[in-house]
Image (cartoon, rainbow, N blue to C red):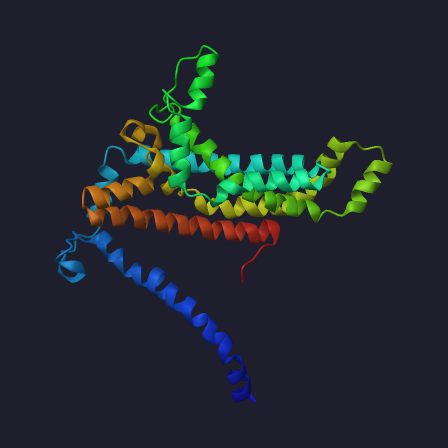
Length: 299
């Protein structure tokens, strides 16, 4: 019986094999490179020929004059993206829930969801054109109002706001669909009872819709905690320039420059290892909170 069951399930296990191989090759084997963080790594010497220097790379990173600012930029940008990425989709989902014409509702959902499928290479070019101080449509409109052109992508006062708002523009459509699905799971008889009691749309939203969405909201918030140190490499890499490093440089872009511009692979790996360890701890905490607060579990 066991042999027959094993033969019956063998095709299913074989289906897992390609995915297992990809995970091993691209996710687990590269983890061996973590040793570079503790070496004065040289490409031609390799792992075994490079001298072991212990924690010197970590000390070097901590002594860098801009490390504190980069960590602050990463935390600030990532946290603001999480906060904005929470409230904007909820607000839009509540508004779309009030739309009664289905073709309008579906059309709006499609339009706001489209940017999610575009890469930051494309969106970066669009933003550069839109925000150009000489030819951009945004500064042209500001000029009509008598406002001097603003260098959005070259001014440290404006650049973090550009990162946060453009990220919300790109991603809020996906989260809106999640919250709309949560709204549809609310028992419609609750709304009928509220109407019988004289509750208007605002009170129905406040006392029925939002509490019904709360488990999904808690789940989305707790799961987003693992991205506190992920401020968006693709976005910052395509939009940033040396003029805005003070307010827009993040850990990922600093790692990139250290590794590929300065060829200090050990230092770059040390920063990446620090970021990975902290992210792992945050993800673990977020899944624990998701289980305790929203009864969500992956195993």
